Length: 107
Image (cartoon, rainbow, N blue to C red; front, side, top):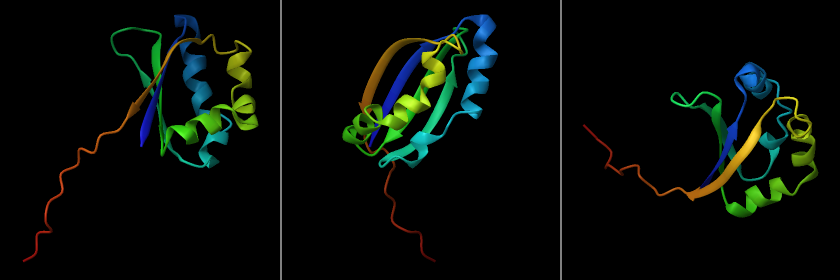
């Protein structure tokens, strides 16, 4: 599994519109092969800084999404400047298994 972090800055007067846009998003990514989930993180120390975190089965799945007509359609509103979001950085991380495996507790 990989995690994609998309850093975004938003002017203070557009933060509410930016946050609301996520609950009104097109949702096209949800049906993409390999898509495992998404979270939008608001920075508690730096107002206007957000991270959009997506989880994918593979990097190839993310790349297929990023090059799809659904991606263009899903990002039409943000590309128009409607939310005031300014992209900062795009990062990828491979998830390292970290859940301990414990033998089942049987009575």
